[in-house]
Structure formats: C-alpha cells, structure tokens
Image (cartoon, rainbow, N blue to C red):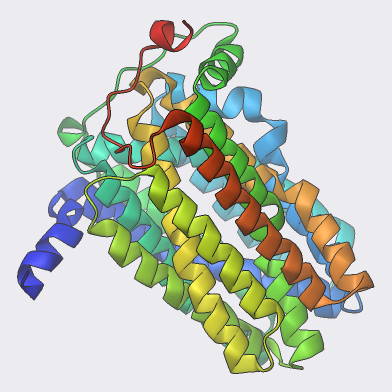
Length: 423
C-alpha cells in the first residue's frame, strides 16, 4: 500500500467539510483543555498545598464526578435534543468558567475551595457536553466512516495532548498558571465558531428519541440485557477508575521520584501523547473494531503501567508512558466505536453517557484512593494499582469471549432493537 493510498484511507473523514471544521475547532480547544489540566494539577500540587497527591485526587474527582451524578439526564439530553445546539451552550459555559478561574488565579486570591467549585462546575458542563459530542460525530460523517472519525477525534485530542502540556509547562514557568486557564477559556470559542459554520443540510441526523419519563431507566434496561456492553463497561470501569489517573501518577513521579519541575512534568505528559497519537493512526486505518482489540489494549496497558512503576530513570518512565498511550488509545477507541455501532441510534446518547460516566465518573472513586496510595506508600506503588487494573480488564474480556465466542465480532454488526435486546 502506497503512502498516498494509506493517507487517503486513514484520513478519509477529513474529506467531509463539516468534519474538517469540527476537527479544526476541536484541536484548538483541546490544546487549551490540556493546558488547563496541567495548570490545575500544578496549582493544587505546588501552590495551594504542600505536594498533596490526595488533594489533586479530590479536585480530579470533583471535575469528573458529575459524569455519574447527572447520568440520568446527560444521555437523555443527547438523545432527545438537538446536539449541535446543546454543544453551543455547554462549550460557551465551559469557556466562561475557565476565563473566570484564570482571572481569579491571576489576582492572587485563589484558594483551594474555589478550585473545588470551578472543577465541579466545569465537570457539570462537560457531563452534558460529552454524550452529545460523542454521538454528533455520526451526524457529521454517517455510520460508514464512524470508526475512522472516532479515531481521528482521538488523534486530534492527543495531538493537542502533545502540545498542550509542554505549552502549559512553559507558560507556568514564565508567567504563571492563570494564563493557561485564560488560554483554555478563549479556546472553547473555536468549537463554538466551528459549530456555527457547519452546513446543516449536509448533516446525517439520526433518529431522535421522544421526550418521555423513564428515558434513563430505558437505557439501563437496554444495557443490562446486552452482555457484550456489560463486559465492555466493566473493563472501562477498571481502567477508568484505577488506571487512568495519570494526573496523579505523572505529577507525583515527576516531583517526588525524578525531582523535575513544571517543564519536566509537561514533557512527560507530551511523551504519553506520542503513544496515543501512534495508537490513533493505527486505529484510523481500521475498518472495524473487535473485542480482541479491547483485550490486547487492556493487557498492554497493564504491562506499560508495570514498566512505569519500576522505571529506573526519567526517560525510561517516559518510554513506558508511550506504551501506555498506544494501549489506552487502542482500547478507548475500539470500545467507543464498538458500542456506538452495535447500539440502535435512538439509544446511543444514553449508552454513550453511561460509557462516559463509567470512564470519567469512576475517577472520583479511584483518584482519592490512588492519591492516598501515592502519599502513604509512594508513586510507584500507586502505578502498580494501574497495572493491576489493566490485567484485570483483559481477564474480564477473555471471560466474556469464552462465554460468547465473539472475540473477533466486528463493530458493524447490526445492533438489536430494544425489543429484541430485552427478550
């Protein structure tokens, strides 16, 4: 396969004008998001506390807790309302909150409890934004290119992950954390502009669910009777709760083990993004997603975390982060497309909301625990918890496939209707 042919297949969703606009806006916004994540962790770890990983865990938990708290409404909103208009509201709110946090930080009056409040409010807006953003991709590209578009979304997100942390490190070191928050605030309006510029007539709108009571319960029943979805959600819970806590892992390893400053922390975060970009490129070239990809992704995630836990030096740890990045991206992308394409359109918002709640909402349970392990026993021991989560998730996937014999089930298999799934 020639380079031109490979590129045409890997980046095929970019042929669609609406998706190109969305991807460009998302790239700018995601750079800002990563800058804020680094700045927020650094602010709490080094300015508002004395290197307290537990406090970083609490802030992280408050930011992602709304994914669970508002689950009965977030997915239903994505299934019922116009997703584009919903995102215009959520992106605008998140931008305004980031600007306010930046202004307060620059004033020098910021306190830890105020960071708690901003983290919770930003998390609330993000909880309503995420299911709409995940399912709106199908409206832009159609189901045929959904696997590719999901992978390119991850590439955009993780491309920003390469730039954002390093930029945040430079910005924090030169002018302070407040400016990183301000940059993020204004970056949200790139997404708002891209949404306003979309050609509505070129969208592929999916069937909307009727507004009714019991929408959330209907989504729970649907998932409960889909054993493949349940297995994926358990795997996502293990990785999301105990594995995806790199705000804690990497910040504490950088400060306590390798004695690196803000720039060194930013470089480590960017190295992990190198792995996720690589994983996204591989995923973008796929035409289907299977359970085998989920299992291999979680197993390699566990291996990479174990290598990171025993890393003898800074650059060995960085290399382990690259492995973790490839594995986590492969797993998250495959689970995203597999769940969307095997779920009927009127249920996708609720199913994806449950998925996001498991991935992101599990953090409030795992982050304080992992932070406590890092404080009580050390960062390496905390990373061992992440390694165990990867191996356990792989075991869950293997057990499901042994029962269902669907190791290589493709993502394009038609989803059962709600009635069929409840039989």
